[in-house]
Amino acid sequence: MRVILLLAIMIFFSGISAEAGEMTQSEMYEKRMELYKRTEMTTGVPWFYIAAVDQYERSIRHVRKDLPKPGGLTGIYIQSEYWKGFANPDDKDVNPLSISFFNGFGQDGNGDGKADLHNEEDVLFTIGNYLAQYGVDDTRFRIALWNYYKRDKTVGAIMANAKVYRKIGRVNLDEKAFPIPKGYNYTYHNTWGDRRGWGGRRIHEGTDIFAGYGAPVRAVAYGVVELKGWNKFGGWRVGIRDLNNTYHYYAHLNGFAKGLKIGDVVKPGEVIGSVGSSGYGPPGTAGKFPPHLHFGMYKDNGINEWSFDPYPHLKAWERAENSKK
Ligand SMILES: [Zn+2]
Image 1 (spheres, rainbow, N blue to C red):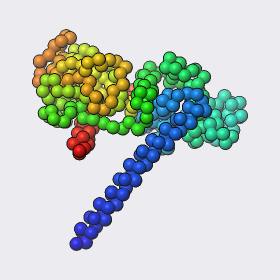
Image 2 (cartoon, rainbow, N blue to C red):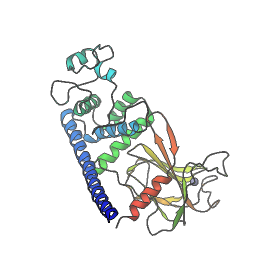
Image 3 (cartoon, rainbow, N blue to C red):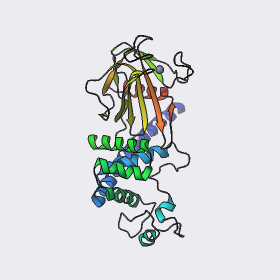
Image 4 (cartoon, rainbow, N blue to C red):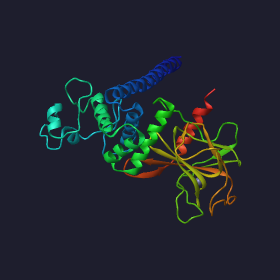
């Protein structure tokens, strides 16, 4: 009896905390969007450019040991030396005049007379003003990003974020999908790290999902098509970068979705191609192994990119989809 009561209490409270968690999540996105829109008003830079930089910075901080984990609503990290000016003797300077005197980056965005590195409006305003100096179209945005980050891959990732935000028109884009739709037979096991038979001593960087020829292959997340074409190992393949700067690699396809091209914004569940057995030879080679989707995931931290095991993610997306009514 006591056990049942305890269980009932536990279920009751876990229900509450789950609900509160969801509320904070959507509230967080709402507040974040408010900040972006306010920055657009004060700097003239469209919110999706601001959001794109903010999201990129947040995504790398989650996987970088030399940067603090993102805490508040915004994700942009600016070194304090850069903010206050390198020669500025006052480490905690918030005076816009002395910061400016020492050629510091920091500016006052919320009009309280302080340029505070720990105030999110000040940080977004400072970044917005930096971007505004260049102008507000894709070409100028790209130049501003290049001068700030000096890395092609970073510029590409932020441009992709901006494209998704602009097209979809919101920032709460966490939705995911399993690559093969319900109603199609498929099987997969954790094959990450296995040795492969073909192409020398390469390690298997992905999960193989076995399905019939022509079964639809879908984008798993919001993102932008970064690669499409033939490779002697992967056959016909597509690469998509998502908003967390994770690259999703779909290989051995039978063909691509009609009209799909590099630069397209895709949504989770959107069909990008179909299952095949292409690869392991010159363009058009197929049938050297049973049809399957090779699905790989690669993480970029702003310095380098590495593959990680997609299996737990596939399991989670599959579970989430199966629990949907
Ligand atoms: Zn594979």
